[in-house]
Image 1 (cartoon, rainbow, N blue to C red):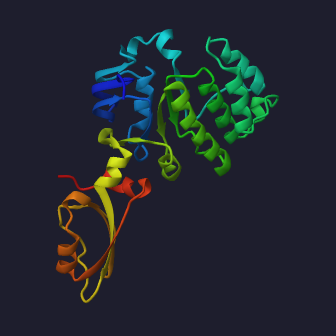
Image 2 (image 1 turned 135 degrees about the horizontal axis):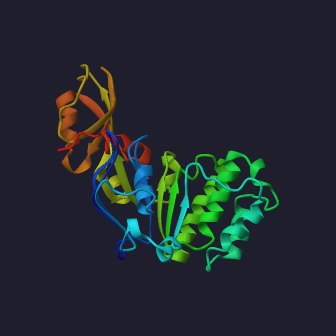
Length: 297
């Protein structure tokens, strides 16, 4: 990891009586692909908008490329690519015309990458934008965000409207971007299975606060799943053990638990509850409930 691409200290953002971000202290570095996770209204989009200066803190500080986000200039903004949840383009233009218009603002626009992405994402440059489907508009936003070879790429739900084949191609291309451009990519998505295939770092927000900020591999080592089956007596309605971070399902005969591996004693647990316990690794989908709702020390 190099110098921070973005750093925030005590960053808070309020919209009237609603606190969208609450004292966020965070540093993002690269090259890497960072998964920005959280439930709806957790503050993910608000944080992304602060990174590019579209929103300014109510309290605290935010800096991108070492510059306060309130005074970001062309030098910094030209190094950023963004895909929003609802991209907007000039509907009367064709895809090719829109890209030519955008390329005029970026001296480093790569026409070879543009051609490659149009083919990869199955976009016809002669198509008129107002006739595009929602998925094709999202594809165009991806092309527009990548052709100037940004150092920082912010992706807000970029795969939600892509079919599985194109989604897989795009995510694999992101790995190439990190290598070729030494880029830092922040991807916010609810499609956790797909995101897991490319991210190496996870930042998780809940209720406007950072509740996790760690390497994905470290999280997978830190937590494990226990599938519990009672033998001779019913299981409790709730497990009080400190090692249990989250109970994903519990009934009288079975339970599925997310457990902090370093604190867990599976033998003692089996004996205490007279139960069989199957220990299994967790993927990001399985980790997510523990990250946002888990019992913490």
